[in-house]
Length: 303
Image (cartoon, rainbow, N blue to C red; front, side, top):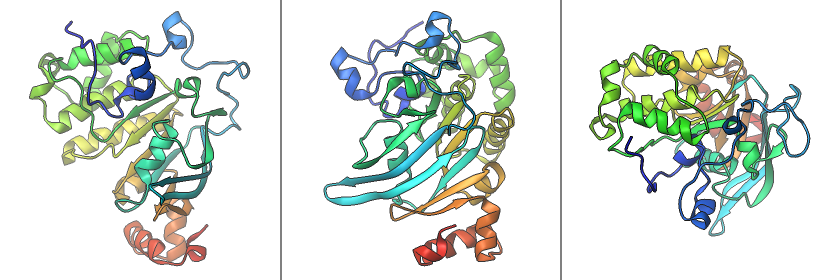
């Protein structure tokens, strides 16, 4: 299999595939896989709650944002953002363009450092590699090496996580996303954006991690593909996995999310269920309630 020796231009792909973050990769001369419990035959769900291991106690949130702030060039991007994502829940981060949604994810994934506050993943600081062992992440723009076939990409990404990609996983993925088996034999440079995104979602959802983080997972997908992806995310949710995703689609949020974190101008304006937001503003739709919330005064909008 023609695997790349170095990886360039991947952006946020490094966490999906189990790679070191860019700053760590440069020190080691390139991107390299983190040592994970799966590599030595260990469980993907660590059971120890000591010695730097993530907690599996149900009352420990999967993610905790504590007064997170971020300023760039003296401009405030995020201000005092605080909410929790309970284990087994699906939370959508919503907001207009430039609200700070992706910046918050980048802080969570330790690509950038918050100016203030802290973030925990299963009880561990998000800056620790061990905290990220239990999550899989897919960026909005998934750009794997174009010379690899779909199958080679799936095998390669699983290998970087210290796992083997099985025939059963391919069967599940092909069925979930209605992909022609022959498509996996074609190089990714011939794939459409939607088809490439499906491959990324297959690798992410079938990585068997308890936490899944997605940045605009429906971006660039046609209506049929959106339905397949929505069904796959619903299945992950029903299996008890924790999902955190960003979205501009209130229809997707209403269908998939238990709770929504509404961010506007870098501030958390609302956290609660989509139904609670509609009830608060008595909107005819979630879109209308969303608009009323961002136009209201802060104290009126807080739950």
